[in-house]
Length: 209
Image (cartoon, rainbow, N blue to C red):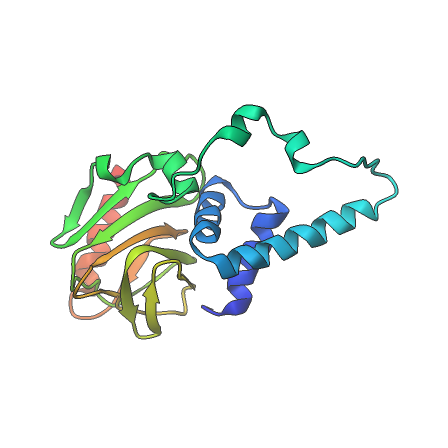
């Protein structure tokens, strides 16, 4: 599931304007942090532009991109010290009120109102999440630090997209910990000796979201 094809599918849907608000913020932040992904997105956007130009039913004119933006937008500086599009949604990460879920693991839910839940997750150095999968897709974008699991190591600007067939045990970097932007379409499903207890906790917690 977590391969080039599924990542490019996310970029293509973003370039096509097909994503909801949560996934749009996720994808835009990914492109902001990952120059290779941004180049792929630019290629997709050019393809969409060429297809519009080839449509005889759509009148076109020779506009520059600056003609479509206000002078206020053009003069605005991007704050590269934070995380681009994400900063427009959550503000400065220094002011976030984190909610501790368990020792070494904190999260913050954004206020975007759609079917997906866009969250920030902060894992202290060496913190791990028990073996689990998801009822739907899980999207993870590393904003800072890194984590590793059974499928590889992920650093700043990397994404991991999993489906219900993928089981993993994420472990934050021993040195820097990990800060991630995540989307989980459905609840987590835990495995192992404490799996039943953790699944019951997740079920009960879902009533208080």
